[in-house]
Figure 1 (cartoon, rainbow, N blue to C red):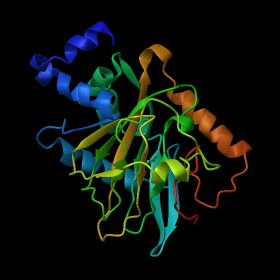
Figure 2: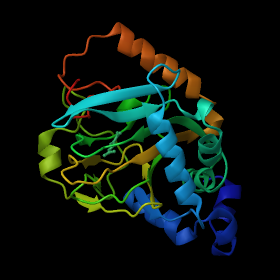
Figure 3: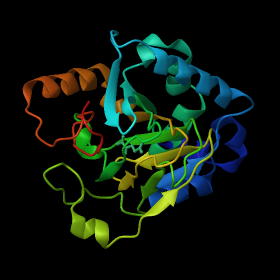
Amino acid sequence: MGQGYAQLGATQYDEEVHITTPQIDSYRRNGWLLCRPFVGGEIRDIQQWVDEVQQWPENGDWLHYREMTDDGPKLCRTENFVPFHTPLREILTTGAIVEIVSALMGEQAVLYKEKINYKLVGGAGFLPHQDAPAYPFIETSISCMIAIDQSTTSNGCLEVVDGQHHVLLPMNERGCIVNDWVETHEWHPVEMEAGDVLFFHSHTPHRSGTNNSQRDRRAIYPTFNAASQGDLRSDYYEEKLRIFRDTEHTAGNVRISLIDDFEGRPV
Ligand SMILES: O=C(O)CCC(=O)C(=O)O
């Protein structure tokens, strides 16, 4: 851990860095940490900004993806939106979120990529996976799920396995964790209120179910790498688009990631 950030973990810095030493220890042990870093009306602003991005047209430099649901095609993900939305860019590149990630990482963090997963009513879930295999140029990273709506077992909250974030696990042909491992480990749901933020390591096993409720379950997921490895955000999106263009996709799902963890049906 970098010296500066070791000091920032101390309790007396709570107000500045929104995180305590016991929280950092808990993240190190479990591979995930649930916090509530936003204050006042901040989450209501963020909800409104997500509403705006959700209404953006198809033909922009951002990336919208749609899935087929029983009620017809629905938006399932938007990526690469920070260049086009100033307030969301500020939330994801300055302030509490980056400070907490940097404290968890032990050095300054920089934004690697960002997405909104909408999981609207009827939207599909994600097979058990680790994120690391989907993220080129870096070995590890930290992501967070910023809950925009309440996230529960009935609308497809995230489920995680504790303390399994140290190695890459055996994968199947979709880049997801093999069944033997999935069935022999304890998964527990992380229910969240709007405004809660779940920080997790890129090796933390996670999955989520379909939204079987009548309420949308939207979340922003920024991912950060150590700044010492460079600002890789444009490289990431260029590489992702190149792989999408140059490789065949046979998994039968709608392709939104460099692994086939998403269970959504193509439109
Ligand atoms: O939003 C979810 O339900 C899970 C998201 C996820 O695991 C991913 O996008 O890799």
